[in-house]
Length: 272
Image (cartoon, rainbow, N blue to C red; front, side):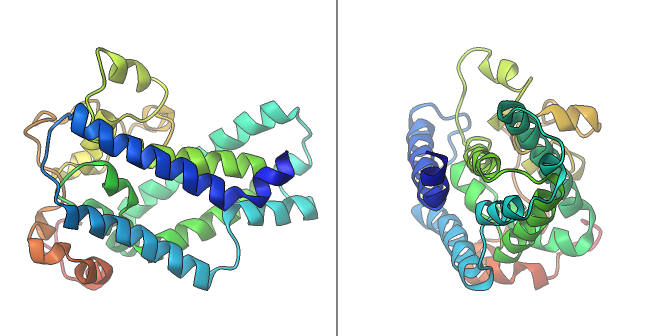
């Protein structure tokens, strides 16, 4: 069974993530949180960024995170290949450790100027809805994958663990950016453990102190532990502005402009 899962990892991830994307697009229409009007062209641009990144990775890197984990397992390197735990314990520990590593990667993306130039492509969108979870510069995706390789090698994370986390990371990237109103007190309950749309929306505020907060990708634990949590946006969820002041012009939202964004000048050099 595990062999079949690993042999079809890319297909499994594509089907699950594609299904979640369609479900969340429908949920946004039925239960919107802010009800922003998102054009087909804007969504097409965001999806195109994801497809371009996937194509570049296919051409540049011969390995996925899962296949790299299989190579690590074969060579018996990394922590989990020396400390033998029951696999369910190792699975949970591996997911938690990988999520902690990605949390710090996200913080560095905001703190290191040249990394921010790549990551601001994601933050330059002036609307907050599910396809924003697909909008990343190809170079950021490549650097993120190389960083994952390092973390996987240090941990000795099993291929199934990596596959499970990759699916969780992709699903929560979509869910946390969705413009959906969760019923009752579900957002308050869920955010005790995982990232919710209201929690992550704060991270996309135009106010820098809010942009530089709520870095979590799957678990909300890390923002609580490392003091980067902001519970609510100061302007309120409905009226708050999304994006970056320097990149609000529609001419800066075209696909070529997004690909060239890392070398573009910000209007206000003090912004970052």
